[in-house]
Image 1: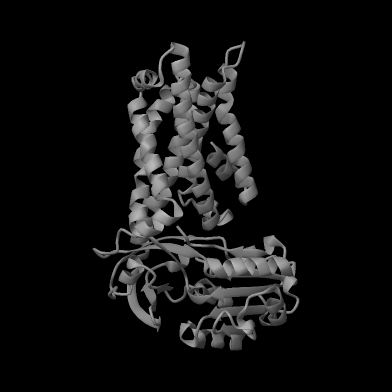
Image 2: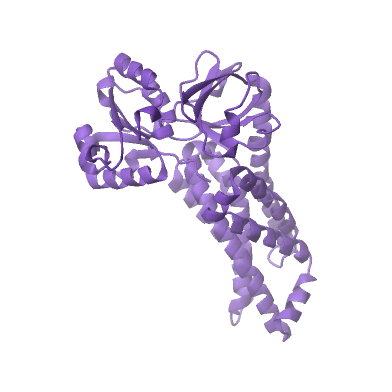
Length: 441
């Protein structure tokens, strides 16, 4: 319901999205509050009902949130959606466990049973065995999704494990309809079913059908691989009707390169140059098994591209001055923005931080763009311990006069991003003028 309202009213931005989710959560507990009999309130059963309805609603929101629907990706941003999804997932799992525990305790109190006997009786209720299996599957995925464990697991395996959540949702759905808050209430059951149908409809449309349609329409293939630096290559792809994608500098696609060893992984890579002449380019650093395999792609490999996604585009600009900050391979979206963003050259600055001269990517291209546009290009190359390379408020003010009058676009490692956040805050830049997207999992 929340996602439907957001889509139809075309509300934009994270504040509107959160407001809609909160309103939906309030509506989801109305059946519990209106069906509570008069008289003394029994807290444990009430907790079981409230947590169960909120968990069920939260599951639908989580599915819709990661459906990659353009109106969500464009107006909220993929990185923010991912963070919300991680927080929401932990909340939903916690609510599910609270619901299960409170239901067993409440049943034990009502039937004067010990907890083990009460749990056995509860499991005999409609849909409870499947719902329990689904809940345990969610708990297992949540355990594997903790930061330390998912990094040990690797992106490809973590992603495959995460897909099992669709099965977990299916296992719990029957219990939701058969539960006491919806059972015997056909209008509410229909509304609940429509909520889930819409959420999964978004997934089907944008995660499965749209990529297949794009693959057929655009016929993307790898044209060539271009070494950029040690462990870094650019993949140039050629296709048809690419102007229809309306891809903007700063945006990214999720790429599947269709070879036996790489087709299972969908990798989020930004465009490292504006889309021109029927070509798209991404630049990839070998950071793990999956990205290293992409360095061995052969010309002619078919490519399935989902997107474009991302809100870190020129549309976010609110000021006439723009500062682009890149660290390492984070130069990829900034390289495209540097060439294309509609800002007078004298008001455009790119600050590029790299550990060594060998780590600087696209130097010739960047120098050419800066010369052609009359833009400012600042390289900070060398050890971060050197005072000239430290990204402090004083350093940024020295390199970028009138810093607080800029919109700032940032793409860098988590450590560098944290330092930049602190420096910009100290310098007095309003938080709303810092634009970034982080591709962590």
